[in-house]
Amino acid sequence: MADGVLSARIKTISPVHIGSGRSDLISNNDFAAEGSRIWVIDLERMFEEAERSGIFDKVGFDAPINKLLGPDQYEKYSKYSLNNLPGINSIVEQIKTAHSCPYIPGSSLKGAIRTALAYAMVMDGVIKIQEGSIGDYPRTAGKSIESKLFGYNANEDVMRALQVSDTEGVSSISLDSVVLYSVRDRSGDQRLIPKEPRNNYTFAMEMIPENTELDLSIKIDNYLFSDKNSRELNFDSKKDWVRNFPKHCNDFSQAIIDSELRFHGKYHVPKMKAFYEMLDSQLKSLNREKQFLLQISWGTGWSSKTIGLALDDDMFYYVIDKFRLDKGRNTVFPKTQRIIERGNVAEMPLGWIRVDLS
Image (cartoon, rainbow, N blue to C red; front, side, top):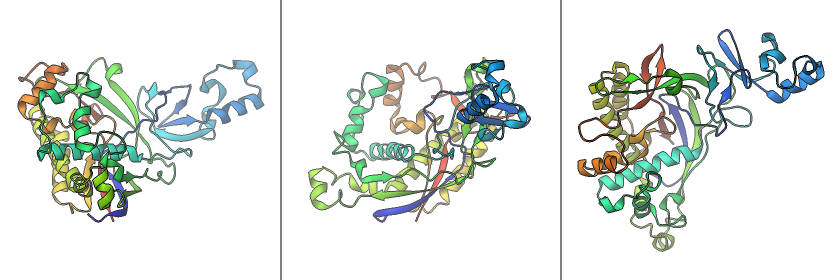
């Protein structure tokens, strides 16, 4: 792939959720529902109107939205609206710009690329993962491996050379720029069934919906890869991995797709299996130098966020046993997934995107 600044476009294949980092939106504190719509209220404007109208004197300063505004005022005092789902009491918020436009941070895409490169390096034998390579705590289990692959400190991390911008925000808040989906945890030994109680394992999530296009830029920093800097920073043996990142992202995605096809064939989830068959066909038709698939951000699961698929069976089950992730070799792991539901039917996974470079 050519070096330098590349224009890129993301197209979401399945809905993408990237959290805002704030607390969940709460019914009648942050949003109000009326008919088929949910209105997320601009609280500052609402309180200014309530103070002007003197309504605080009647209902108190801690009154809920439906005591401060009438249903005919929700739209006027809203920041944006969403499709309504039955029985919604809280909403997990999608990250947005200051103007309430959803976007994808560059860090989310770059983190997924980093995982794909780590998978590719391990598969190619850059390092051999042994029991001593695995840290003692889940959050730092792969720190030693990551240091050997990418660099031992921030200055010598080869991923410095790959710079990924945030996407532009979706140009305007329309009825379909951010959508509310129902996501549910499903697991089981023979069938992938919804976890109960429903309230503990079901989430109303704001997401960027499928078939949304967002523009960004990706830069490979030639200066860091110059002969002198490359030697000083120990990048000589690593820079080709970064330069060929689209290929490695596609290889990693193929491994995930193959794993998911086996999983959903075993667990008999027809729509999920059909989704991955579609994804497999799409991946095989790409221009692999200029297009790649990747699964990013929240709800995408263990396989997409680790190099677990690169481990041989002995190391795979060593990790599972060490961190008590499952009960041994007689079960499929991971057997719990977060899946978008429609009408209580498992519909599709989260976070799949296609990236086109130009």
